[in-house]
Image (cartoon, rainbow, N blue to C red):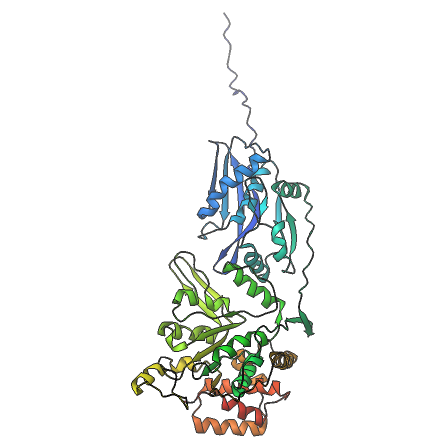
Length: 525
């Protein structure tokens, strides 16, 4: 019997070919405060118990997106693979990612799971209906505008119904889609050509140094309805010309609120970025912007809380009245009745043009470039300055009333006016149209000098560059500093107001007449 001998060679084993796992990616974004953060949406399909998971600290509205995505895909005859689907939102450590606009990138990554693709620089936004329609979202405009301001976006797939306002944003190629199927075809064929026409603003305009400025000449509330008060109306025009902070004091019914409400229509023109910034804040507040060349005006009641004025709230911090008034007017009527905490907190936006909100879950900073207008009675009963009515207040009440406004707060206001008492002989002497035309001419002078900021918002270095005093005007200012003991901030205010008066008077330098008028509007201590 012959025995078989083992040669010692091991049997050959067939090795399985390792398949590389495909990770597809699309780009989206989320809001952190008022600024957009880029989010990379990644998808993998792995063997395991079939399921659909979204990871990366997604909020509840993104978790709910799973059901909308499933329905939209099934209605469009998509068959889910028997695999475990994992969607990751990167960076994973960024908290509170939110927004229904994540629906479309999630659905596209699942629908195209068998195809490898990577479209760098292509953003995808859109909420999905259960039938696969792509819907708009209130966060789209502030998101895309913020990305554009940061230079992060060049093209994006967006819902067709959002184009009516997204086409105001220049420099971004929008590819509009109505349904999920349209978006799938786009990614399959890679036909990313823009199909949106650029928007043209319906407003009067002019150009200075290649920048177009827009304005409206519609005066629903006209200054011709304000009789008398020549000094206050002149001060209002100066304040409007340079976007200066403005304070009015006078008896009840003398026209303080009337003047404040009419100032909105005579404010300086806007350029495109300012109009878009205003619209962005309106979207964040849940309003529908009209994109008109009119600056905003907000007039909160004196019972308003600190959170409603400056922003905040539990959880996601929201913007307040100060942000909504940015690029326009914030008007405090009966200012001594506002909370002391609110009045002192106003010092930051008046000085720095920004507001910082710190919460446990969020720390945000937003722009607050406001023109602040305030009005008050001279005493609690309002009759202190009256020649015909008797004041019923004691000296202690008057002092307590007036001391509610601190010197550091009042130091940040450029123009102060004591209103004249109403007389039956008062007549209308100027219209809003005439005042607005003068403001526009003063605005042109500021821009021709190369100023980025208007006179009321100039920095210390810019004051030295643009607020150049004539020799006589310089001597008068030096005398006033010695006589009245003006602080450094008060001197800067006088120079800025003098610059606006000089612009209205078409003077290249601040002359003697201009500085004398500017000093007449300073605060009397």
